Length: 182
Image 1 (spheres, one colour):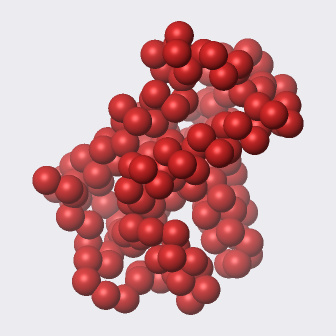
Image 2: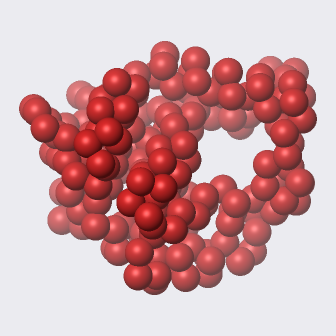
């Protein structure tokens, strides 16, 4: 599942896995150690995941992307507009912060004030890196290393694709052949 931070990769990947009866591993759970420190075992864990017979996961983290892409049979690109992603991400961040939701290895969302003080706060990171997925997919396609791509550009397209059973390209123009924004 490809897309920027907050696009819904984990949510959609979990839904695809459930519908198809496949195992799902959330890459964030492999990456983040206590205190938000990257786990030293991450690269080995991602390689072990990719070596599995079947799996569903997110296409993120520079250490994991190449090994996942080499084994992926389908790449689903959640190419939602930046405004939609930010609405989703702000709502998720506020909900997690308000409830004190524990994420991976005991981590919780940082205080909201850190959006102003931390250049890499998730909200600022998501805004800054939003176009990166399009470039990564274009590069992989140009290098002939990309499986078929399903590009979903709205929540309605995501719902429709899931209702059709997932795992198959969406009908219509541009489905399965992404054209990065220019």
